[in-house]
Amino acid sequence: MTLRAGFSGHAGDFAYDVAIEAENELLVLYGHSGAGKTITLRTIAGLARPDAGTIEIGGRMVFDHASGIDEPPQRRRAGYVVQEVALFPHLTVERNVLIGVEDSGDARARWGQLRDALHLDGFDARRPHELSGGQQQRVALARALVRPVEVLLLDEPFSALDDALRADLRAELKRLQRDFGIPIVFVTHDLREAHLLADSVAVMDQGRVMQLGARDEVFQHPTERRVAELTGVRNLFEGHATGGRVIVDGLELALPANGVDGPVDLGIRSERCILRRFDPDDSPPGNCFVGRLVEELAFGNTHTLRFEPDGVGLRVEVEVAARPYEVLGVAGRDRWVIELPPEDLLVMPRK
Image (tube, rainbow, N blue to C red; front, top):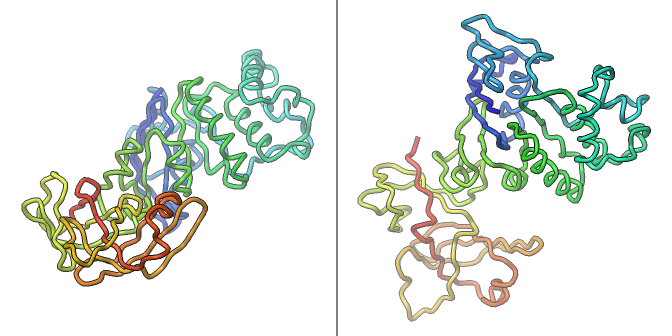
C-alpha cells in the first residue's frame, strides 16, 4: 500500500503546502506545535479540503482538485486516531470497536484478529472507565482498523500516557505496521519518539515539509539549518567553506568530503563532540581547540557540558555518558581539548 499526497491550502490565516509519500512504512510527521501536522492528517482523511493538489491512497485517487475528485471520509479507507480517544462511555469495548459495522461478518472476524493482536482478550464487556489509558488507546486503534483501511493516521495518540505505556504501545504499533502492511502516518513533537518509531521522517515547520527521507538520513544529514535545529542539533555556526575547509570565528576546520563551497551553516550534535584531556605543553591537533567548562547539567545517565573557547574556538555543548564522564574525571578539570571530527560535521548551504 502507498500514500502519496501533495496539496496546499489555508486553515484560517494559516497557509500550508505539503508533499509526503509513504509505502508500507511508518512515516513520522515531526515538528513543533503549530507546524501543520494535524491539518495534514485531517486533509488526508477528508476532514479538511485543500485549495489545490492531489491525494492518492492505496493506488486510488481520493482527491484531485483539478479533476474535481473529492471522496468523502468514509470512502477514503483511512483509519484515524486522535489524542483524545473519544470512546463512547456508555458502550462496551466490543460495541465501541464495532459501532456502525455490527452487522458485518468481515468486521467481526477482523475484530477477533485485532483482539489478539492488541491484547484485548476478555475486554469485550468492559466500559471505557474500566480501562487503563493504554487499554483505551488499544481500543481506539482497534476501532480504526476494524474497517478495511489502506492507511492509518495517528495524531499524537500516546502523548497523554506515561513512559512505560508509551514504550509498550510503540512496540505494538511497529508490529501492527508489519502485520497489516499499510502505511502509518504518526504525528509527534517528541524527538525521542520520532527516533524510536520512524522508518521515515517528514520534518515540518510553518505549514511545509522541510525535509522528507529515511530516519537516519534526515537526522544525520539535515539539508538546512532549521531542520538541524528542529532535530536537536545544539551546536550551530556560520562560516565560509572552500577547498574542503571552513573558517568559523577564526577557527579553521577540515570538512567531510561533500564538495560544499561558499557561505555555510555548520553544525555538530552534542554527542558527536570528543573531549580530550588538556596538556598545556601540547598544541591541539586538527579540528580541535581548547575550551573552558562553564556549565554542567546532569540528567540520568548523561552529562551535558557547556564550554567557552579559551582563545580561538567555539561555544559548544558536549554530551557525555556517565561512564566516560567518570573515567575522564570531568568533575575535576575545567579546561579541555574539544575535538570536532570532520566526518561528524553537518555542512549546509546557508539560506
